[in-house]
Image 1 (cartoon, one colour):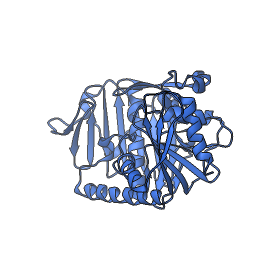
Image 2 (spheres, rainbow, N blue to C red; image 1 turned 90 degrees about the vertical axis):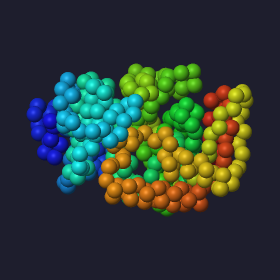
Image 3 (cartoon, rainbow, N blue to C red; image 1 turned 90 degrees about the horizontal axis):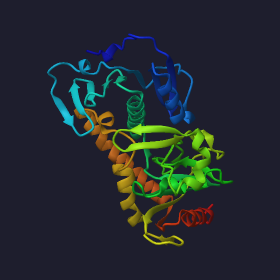
Image 4 (tube, rainbow, N blue to C red; image 1 turned 120 degrees about the horizontal axis):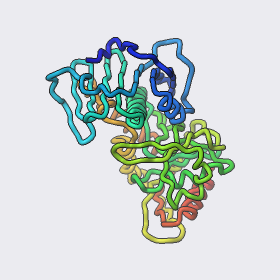
Length: 353
């Protein structure tokens, strides 16, 4: 059985990596050099030197065939879904991915171990675990993710919320290498309790189809594959490959909900009330539908954590209200023509910047 409280270096560690996400520091010790390099591409903007103080989470990870013996015998499952079974014992949580991987996290010591039978699964678990714990940390500090793409020009940011497969990445890709536009995030810009927007530039994930072909095909030789268990493979590009600068924080915001329409031509842009926009923010920010994280790593088993999560919902709601105060609100009815959709959204941002 593994002992997370005092993680032992049973084998030689090949790579030691550090990340710092706005004060949330991560130490990763990993034996797979390939997975280490992939994570450095995923979080290239946030890679850092070893901090002087203790990290917020320390993770040890390796490819291993020894999966079944990592969980104490006879421990009952507390949660189960098609992806994994969860077992809790005091401050320690075991996530069992049906014979393919096991992760073990000690919430008191903030240490984590991950064992997976292949590098692809190890990469996926580490990527989602880091983002889940980072989100938990920042939610408690009043810094929250919005499921949207974001770019800025001058003193103004534009944030576009859409359903999954709704075209966020396609619109975002049209702004890449476009002069005068800076990047916030292709999926999760941050909102603080003053309603200000902060960048969260991690790797760009895309599917190379007819919509992204024109804008992203030139980066094909620089892309790498993310083999996701639940949602299938996706191609990724290090955000630092693009020429755009990373945006500074913005308080002036154009906020829109993208709605797909089955027709050709230019998009229709309609101004809406802040009250109507609140409905979209409740889904994409307060509840956080579509955010890249795993509840098994975000939610803890203690009663104290339930209180913390209620506080998080209130902080997210407060930040959403301040964001509304700073925002011009729209619905954009997107057509089947991505180039014309881009021109419509670009024109909307330009009219305020």
